[in-house]
Amino acid sequence: MYGGVDVVITGIFKIDLLIHDAFSLKDKRQVIKSIIERLKSRFNLSISEVGMNDIWNRSIIGISVVSNDAAHIDSMLSNIASFVEHDSRVEILDTFVDKLHYE
Image 1: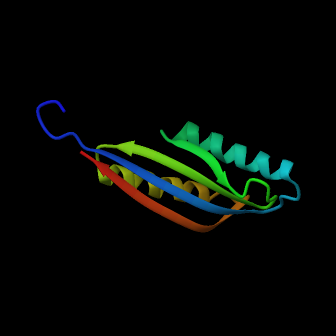
Image 2: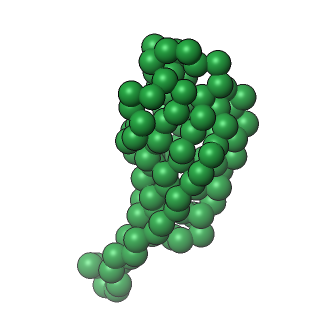
Image 3: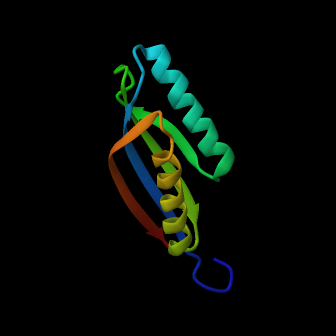
């Protein structure tokens, strides 16, 4: 703490995806790897496939972003969701968002 209260906010975003035109784990991994790399290059985030690793047409990816501004977190998560929604290779089936505040 330097002269005041420092706040750290972590945004957690879980996205459940259906992968179109994936007929093998190799097809799936190509799509997921591409999405993960594109998100990493466009946004300042941490990301990984966290579920359904062995199901060829489904994936769950987990994303984490950190800021000191809740509005910035909300904006980033909204932009990430929009980015994934516009990828015709996948369909978002479900999402989960949480924010953790640390002082």
